Length: 81
Length: 149
Image (cartoon, rainbow over all chains, first blue to last red):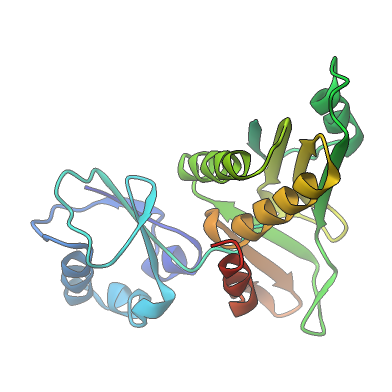
């Protein structure tokens, strides 16, 4: 699965995108898996209230299933306009 | 309906001409232009950097535009949002809505901006004397969406 990071999430994790092999069933499971993996992920995802997620470029929820998802993105609340 | 996500600057007058070219049924065009301010929270800003999510940004803007068009009687809409490094005074965003009467055009333009603020995948980073600082989303922007629901 392609995993993308934006803004300070990208800065904390250190890469804009990466391919992650995972069998996580939901977004929350994937986050838990990444946090266990390395400290930089743990730091980036320490406050999930400050994280938004998009699945295949549509805003989604932490509880959403990952079945069939090709691209997942994590980012802070958006500040457009 | 037309959406552009671009690094380049835009010309509001030229965009207005395109919007109304060849038609005489438009009674009102409301445009909003957002600019980079030189201060935030009392601190000077040397530049503003806008990051976005290519692909999702275009889709999100098109969805917001379609929503406005289904809600109000609009004859044309235009959204331009810039990304990259911008200096104070630079134009960031243009929203335009054309309608037979001003009421729909005013409301649609405000609706478009309210949704752009917190539903379009852009992130602003202010360049200050101390380095860079990501702009926090404001609760007021989120609350602004509630009045449209």
